[in-house]
Image 1 (cartoon, rainbow, N blue to C red):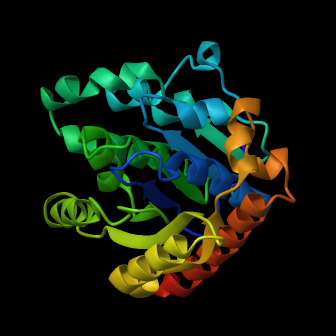
Image 2: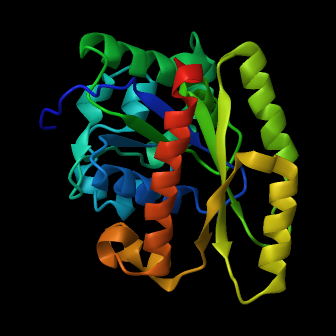
Length: 275
């Protein structure tokens, strides 16, 4: 990876998590990362999903995933050895692949299984004067397994995508309980950075109803920006590019650009507390 200057602000790490599949975790990791990079931030997307969809969506093919997050988590390679340049300036990737699917048993039989990712990031920052990124976005698998626990243990905060569809709140109580357990036992500083409403369809009353329920449940944790249901967001991964690169004028692309601005502003306001 080419050298990037050390960021002036401390590195911030977000776990993008929700145990429900199909809620937009990977789409958010790819497009929020791209939008943040477009503002001049330096971003690392860390793919911890065995499906490796974030890697595919950033056009890193399986044959190019020589070192993956699996190698980092089992301690065979340092984090920096897994960096892959993407076609998006300022955006790097640690790829994931199917080897992660058998990691649960492998990690749980070793020492500090929940701290593997946290230790890898800490070692990287120690060796590189704090690191060369402003943000790390961890794309979590759709389950509350050891990979997601590693992500939450390593993160400063959790970003929760919630789809504006029936049963949207199903399972969120379990996710909140998992976050509380991680806070109590592994990472007391962990926060909920925000909740992102995804797949919003302004043509249906149900989408607005679900959005209102989520806002009632999470209050000011919910971002004002809602990600619409958008064909371009669905098409872009098959072309190996973020929607923002595929079609910057698409409603979904504009929404992620707005979300990035909102996240940066939220981080700016939280900076004194975070410090």
